[in-house]
Length: 117
Length: 115
Image (cartoon, rainbow over all chains, first blue to last red; front, side):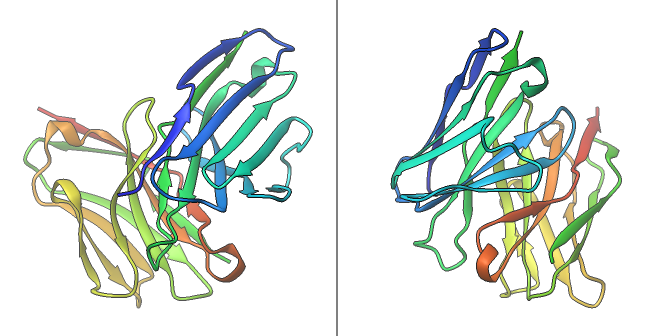
């Protein structure tokens, strides 16, 4: 199957700093990528849809100025958590559909655990 | 609109026992349905998917699920649980039309397997 890779897998930062998380499709091109957030022992919440070459589409209640998304190429989307605070600590997961398949099956990255001190 | 309900946030079985994880969906279009497994601090791995072909879908690690339109269900089963099956399981329905590719997840079911 297709491979999606996230980096870093774990990051610890101080409150007030910004953190960038990368999501790469390694063996296919992805014009769209999805960013999810997962709180402990809870389901995945869709944060935004990243669109290559255009602005991301954010879900209701997600602060676009807090969570900056850039989809600069067909294989890379980045999520930047700006001025991070402890409440931003979470597990962030990206996914991308491999449109070479009729179903556009989603492939998930390994996830990035952010801890804000 | 699409949504998924997973009945039971925790399921415990003995090793070798039947595993049954329940999922009911709501969809305004013919659904694509998925089961994913998540191990601690990891991303999601696809177990199996239903895409309007055979209603009984076989996946990896001995899991299978049956799509029942009349019951709007897509329950996940495995005849004999293994210790390595202990994980979080998510049922998901895929959006259609303009939301193609977006997945709507259930709240998840934590499977515990006792020796």
